[in-house]
Image 1 (cartoon, rainbow, N blue to C red):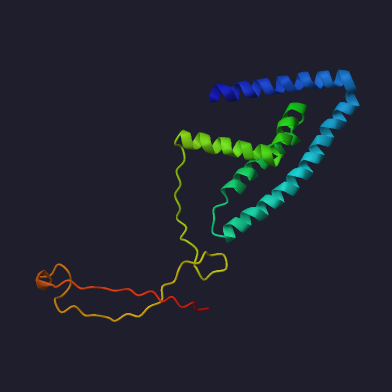
Image 2: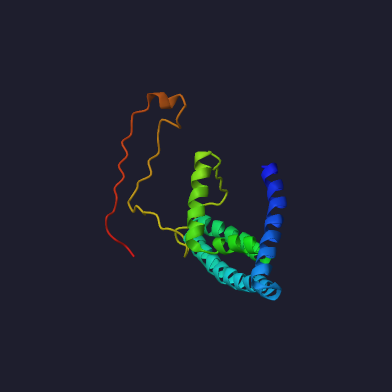
Length: 181
């Protein structure tokens, strides 16, 4: 991994310089610089618009009691894409614009998911309790309404000497099918 990062740190600037020289020869110095500035401005505007909509979708997922995994991945892609668009160069701008295209992010997310699942690198823990069913964002669970009668066991608690002579108790739970509002 370190070797790949080293090659990228050396190779990308060399590639960008070569593309700048070629673009400067074909369209001139000022149009080349204008194109670099224009891609940064347009990319920043697109990133801001898509970032705000991603935040809104993440908020909706959280309110529905779901983890916003897809939205977090899209946010990371937008952040990387925005950084690449602000970096001067045509190659980084091309990759940055690709990360701003939703179908490209979808394909990339599916590829990453399958890679992580195949490599068995996915583990998830949560300390967050499930949402309260009565809350606005919580999912409702079925409510069983019924009647009960408290029975005191004369043989004592389980495990005591008297409980060895205990008789089996039959418990019946009746579900009330009436709809209540």
